[in-house]
Image (cartoon, rainbow over all chains, first blue to last red):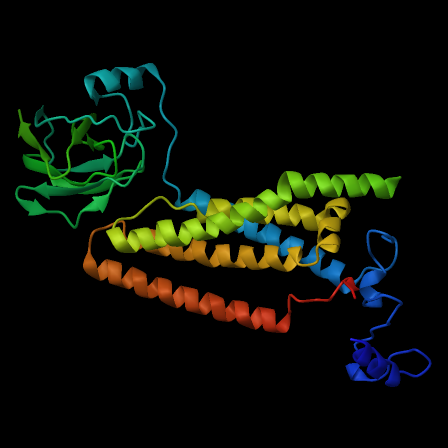
Length: 217
Length: 150
């Protein structure tokens, strides 16, 4: 290191670093530092703003932008909802059915291993088709289901979330919900039929299925 | 006196918040990669994504550290801390985007969709890392040797 110092001293005139390769190092007794950084330190904060400080301040704005972008992205992509604690929701947990709760209602924060069964739904809707909403009414824990209408799959198995997925289905026939994957605690899902404005909170094991038989009165 | 108070605040901020955020980021980066991304690739099923939530926390804490003069002293005392913070945040950002792409692609059990998601994720990681390299080449993080005691 002494040799390097001697070399540095040799390149200086009157102790001032010269040339582009000098790096402006000013050797002191037992340390060396870059003067422009040393000017604004914790010992001398009132001196001119160093490039390092400028960089930190500029970086802080960038980081704020990153934080805002992060929270917007998280909020946009998150489909998780808060648990409905109303009386209607409490009743729905017992009856596993509701005509007052909206599609997408979350009843529980975690899955309860509930295994429901097949249902026969009688309605008086004259429409040929209706909208079916499917969602996870408990935790978004990676439960996957597949919807089959009269023996025909409506698509590949998909992960159910608190935000409902919609399908157009006939008002008469058989609709099967197959439990493809249990993310833990059983596959808890709910279906809402637009034709009778009713939600059915159901559950199924992995590999099992629930059949909804739709009959017009 | 003012200097002493500022130093105390910097120490409190460093040991109370900053060091935990850095550790949190280390663990977060590892978790997102090995548990979420590799986990999804292994199982074929999506998981809940946490990258952007981590990014918000990290960005917010580091931004405050840069703004508040007393907290900024942490960076003066430990010159490696600022580059480390920025690098970890950049890594986290890249991983968070990758995780989200994969999670979106794996929401449906469909091989073509899975393949497309993996390809898009790989392209995204490469592009982001190239951008990161260009940025760091233009703005190197190794700024100075602050106090080189011999």
